[in-house]
Length: 253
Image (cartoon, rainbow, N blue to C red; front, side, top):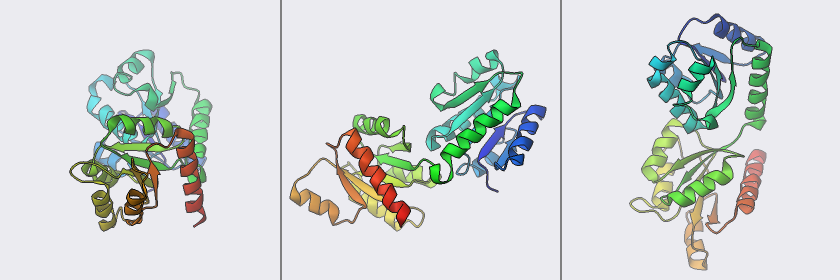
């Protein structure tokens, strides 16, 4: 079942059920869930937006909220929260504002809510879907800098080493991996080989990040046949332009 919107309510809420019916009417694939983590996990790769109806028991479902928060953070997805001020105060201690698209208070204006959902889905699916980029680098400062540069234009994941990268890609799809060429334990070439040897990740394009621009170093990188390589001295405008051009070429293939 294709699901773009996940409506979560721990009770058989009339409003939640009404919302599901409204979204189905306008052709948005939607699923209703009462906080069943195993069932939520089935939709993990498909969900673009999580609608959380905050009920009176919200303080008792922290495990479910943490799971939903971590899933949204991994996939760079967003929440719409529905509930009163007291419930919102509880939830915002677990779910950061950066993951919240909007908070609606009751009484709910259904047309306003569905309009918000439709706009978000139209802007984040199909041809308009943001690409997902995984950055793999043991230099946390540099990785976070690149994350800040890209987060406005792409869904961005981060991994500090090859093991974390493989773990991320086992749970999430990626359109491109930016991979540090020089890392301890498993270096960039070794991680690239691991990705190529796995049927699930073998087709993901990889661009190397390297701090060396001399001819010998560049030839060594190119010999591994990555999608491209980027010098770590690249600035934000140049990086964004490079990635835009890359995805435009991919679209034409």
